[in-house]
Amino acid sequence: MKLYDSMLYPRETSQRYVVDLCGYWNFKIDKEHNGRGDGWQNGLDESILMAVPSSFNDVFTEKKIRDFAGDVWYERAFYVPEEWKEKNLEIRFGSATHKAEVWINGHEMGKHKGGFMPFAAKLNDIVKFGEPNIIVVAVSNLLDFTTLPLGRIEMLSDGRQIVLPHFDFFNYAGLHRAVKLVVTPIERVEDITVVTDIQGTDGIIEYDIETSGESDVHVEVYDEDGELVGESSGKRSEIVIEDAKLWCPGNAYLYKLKVKIVNVCEVVDEYYLNVGIRTVEVKGNRFLINNEPFYFKGFGKHEDCEYHGRGFNPVVALRDFELLDWINANSVRTSHYPYAEEFYQLADRKGIVIIDEVAAVGFQAVMNAVDKSVFEEEIVHSETLEYHKLEVERLIKRDKNHPSVVMWCLTNEPDSKNPHSEKYFEEIYAHGRTLDAQNRPLTYANFMYIKFEECKLHQFVDVIGLNRYWGWYEKPGEQFVDAMESFKNDLEEFSTPGKPIIFFEYGADTMSGVHKLPSVTFSEEYQVEFLDAYHKMFDDFDNVIGEQVWNFADFQTTEGPLRVDGNKKGIFTRTRQPKQAAFTLRNRWKKIGDNHKS
Ligand code: BDP
Image (cartoon, rainbow, N blue to C red; front, side):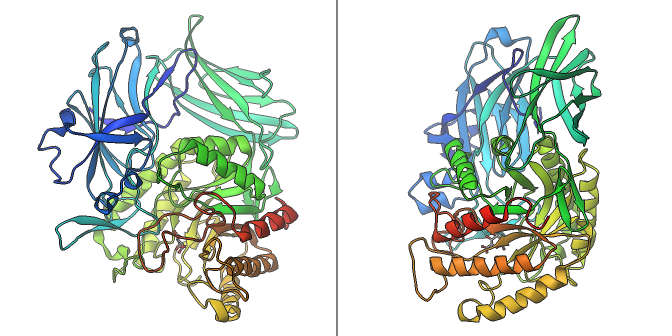
C-alpha cells in the first residue's frame, strides 16, 4: 500500500461523489513517542476531540501541548455503501503538516512527506463495505534540513524536544485541510492541463487530458451563462472561442471546461475545470498580462488566524478577499508555502493575481543563530535538493490550471551568497523551467543582507523579488533618512535591464491602537511614514513593477524578543480590522490602478 499525490481537485458531478469527513475526530498527543509501539494504529483509546481542518496548537491552554514536537494522532470511523463496490475509492487529505502516516482498519497505508500538498490512499482492497472502517493518521510536526520548510530539533533540560523553525511563522501542525472520501468511476479523468492564448478577438484553449482508460474523450466549453461556446473530441486538442471574454485582473471571466469520457454512447466519467483565458509574459522591464503591463499591488500573506492556526477557514478566506477588494489590491504572494486549493479558486473567481510559492524557506543561518550556512551541510546538496525539486513539481502540477497563478516563486530568502547555493539553485530553476506547459515566469525573494553582486541566484530568474526592511531592521527611527540612502543604492544595484523588480516584502511592525506624534517605531504613524517613503522610491524607479506589503495581517510566530504576540507588520490586525496604513494604501492603490507605469 502506498500514499500518493492527488492533484486533481475532488468534485461532485453526474459520475463522481465526494463525502466530506471534516468535523471532530478522535485525537491523542504521543507524549511518550511510543504510539506505534502501543498499537495506536489500530485505534485510539482514551482520546480527546480535535477539529478537522485545524492546527491542533491553539485549541489547548497548556504551553507544553501548544509547543509539542512529535506525532499527534487522529482517528475516526467512516462507512462505504455496497453500491460503491464497482467504483474507484480513495481517501484524500488536502494537507497534513508536515508528515503523515495512515492506517485503515489497522493496515498500514503508507507515509507522506510535505505539509502543504494533497495526497490520497486507495481504499478498494482494504475497505469493509457497509461496516465501520477505522482510519488512523499520525501527523508529525518535526522539521530538519531535509524538510520544507527547514528547521531543527532541540532538547530542553526537562527532556522535552521542541522544534526550532528556521522561519518567522509559528510551526502550526495537524490536518490543516479537508479530508474527503472521493468516489470516481474506474475509467476516469486523472489529469488535465490547459494552456490558453489570445489571437485577435479569439481565445484559444489548448488541453491535454489523461485518463485511466482508452474510451473516447469529449470536451465542451460553456460560458458564464451556461451557453455552449466550443467543443472538441480526443485527449489532446484545441478549442477556439470566438469573441472570447478574457480573464483579467479585477475582472475575472471563467469558462467551464467539461470533460466527458464516453464509452459507446454512455458517459462513464464527467469532470469540469474553470478556465480563464489569459496570457502572461515578461518583456523588457514589464510583466504583461494579456499583453498589457501589469503593476502588482498587494501583500505577502499567511494562512493564519485565531484558534484555527493554519487550518483552512472558509470564512476568513472570504473576509480576506473582501479586504483585498476594499483596499484596491490586485495580487498576493502565497508566502511561504502553497495555500489551500480553495484559496486559488477564490482568486480565480475574484480576479486576484497570485505568485505561487513553494515552502522553500529557512535556507539561511540567521533566524536561530546557527553559525554556519545550511549550504555547508552535505545533506542539503543531495536529499534536500531532490525533495525541493519534488515540491516544485507538486506545486506546478496542483496549481497549473489556475488563471490567477501568473508566476512561480521557488524560494524565499535563501543564503544565496554562499558559493554552494549557486549549483543548488541552478538545478532547482532549470528543473522548474521544464514543468509548466504555460511557461510562466520564475522568481525568488532576495534577502536584504545579500547584495546584488554577492547573490548567486538572480541570474536564474525572470523577475527579481526583493524583501526590504531599511528603516526597520536597519537604521530605524531617527536614522530613517540614512536608511533611505542605503535603500536607494541597494535598489540601483539590483536594477538590471530585462529583469523587472517586484517588492515582495517591505513593512514595519505596528501595534494597532498605538498612536504617537511625532511617530515612533511600532506606532501606526511610523508604519504610514515608512510605507510613504518606500512608495516614493518605487515611483522613482521605472523597473519596479510591483509592491507587496509585508504582511496582509498580523500573524503568529515563535516567541522571542523581536515579536509581540507574533509579527505585527500586518496592515490588518489578526482579526482582520484595518490599521491606519490600510487607508493610505487604499488611496494610493486606487490612484495608481493596475497598469501603473504602462
Ligand atoms: C522576512 C521573511 C518573513 C518575515 C519578515 C519579517 O521573509 O517571513 O516575517 O522578514 O521579519 O525575512 O517580518
